[in-house]
Length: 258
Image 1 (cartoon, rainbow, N blue to C red):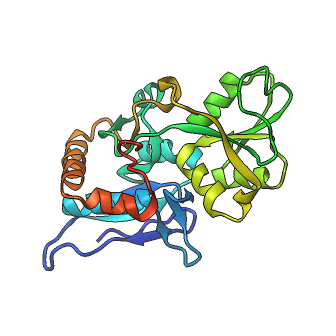
Image 2 (image 1 turned 45 degrees about the vertical axis):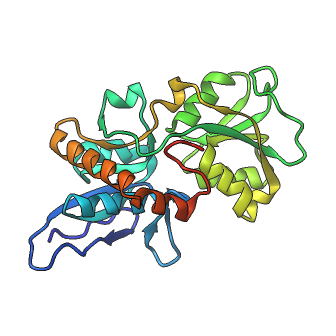
């Protein structure tokens, strides 16, 4: 078995392939800072919806998978440098990213949203309504691209992780935060810090920014692995395994957003 890789001091190993069989070993890259999709527990384990789906797909294709945590801004370069074999980290399938990497079929759909303080009266989000306000988003994401493009007259501040943006939102240093809808719903509904705030405005569904859904990224030359993952994804959708994982984390079906 290949030596367990560690980035950010975090890695776990999936075993359980049939006894006595020498299984393929793959490395699964993720961020580890995007709850409830991927995050690091106090015990140092990487867990979350992305991880559960990824490890189930590994099992279906007969592979042992090592989880490698990588800062978001280096996650595609890490893939291209062969630090891991595929990325499952809630990555939107967009045209600019497709120029660098290949994607599987979507494993969930997505929308973005705004978060504001609970006493905020903002309901419409335009460059005029956000002029001179402080808007936060995670750097290197489609949410950041949206904030920069949509609110040029705002003070847009970008953060290395979503957690850091959320902390500044909770601390009153941001007037508005733009992010992926599901993690931000989790933030405002389930966390102590999120009690400060509320979701506001219509969901952001512009395909220019949310793309074709969320997919698993691979190197373009790894078409065989992409096809195997697509087949495994179809299997877990069909046999109810995907739904069981989904329901562990969310009250709506991420695949249909209903």
